[in-house]
Image (cartoon, rainbow, N blue to C red):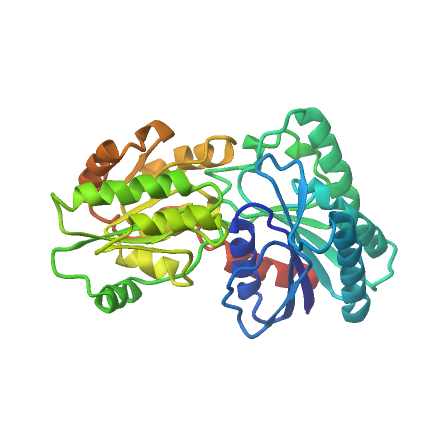
Length: 386
């Protein structure tokens, strides 16, 4: 099959990482992954062609579109993106169009998606089946009733299938979308989409890093980086204090989208045994190598923690319900402690780190469905033939 997969990430990079894992699992098909966020390094499989739309992203309130090109206005970029998308569909005539999150989110990108979906329904690109790819938890809305009415109208008229990337026994869509019963198209739970890794890769990485016997490796991460500066600052300061008690090594990943001045301030706090970088393609290997993870609580990070079973301190982003709700649901499946922003003083955080470093990795896989990418791809194969 010929598949076009649309993903617009606007603040972090979690939506892109999850979409790439789904696309990776579609290895029997030709996949074009179309993304419109800020540039980030990707490890693309051979069957995935990547098309980057001119960059648009959003402010922290998710109310304003921002141009990624200082030489072009938002309106100019919007026109260019519509042309690119329409031309791509006209050339490729795909069998399946997968849309990440929309219409449950990214409503400000209706300027390009709504006319495209309308043309698909009108048969302008042949017989195209349209699929919504949705994560486990929706962010809360100021007017839930109006939001759900709008979603249902677009979903029921413009889509053929909804794939929910969650274990429905733990995090059903009903938890954050009250009108699931009014969805007319099939709703399929795929399981959580989780990046694959193995313990042997972690042991190899410990040797590459020169981790000494008895030395503890702490891995800190801030996702895309826009919301993680305070956490990363606290981790660096806490690790300096921890050095006096334990032989620790810190590998910190600030995120590709952290502001440059914030990133430089973290670098000024680094030193022997405390390294700060923006990003690694081997993050899952780092968690298999680690004795402790300290992080935010986005979808992909939480799935990586569940997959590796590493002891973890997580500080969920508190301005939305998504991350706090997720960690409450998964906390019993991990050696995990939940931090609040009040816990980010270096002295207290160093004590929390020392206590969690005495914990051991969870043996065996978590009793949850973590095979979402492979199962979603398998379902699409069967469904497309019906």
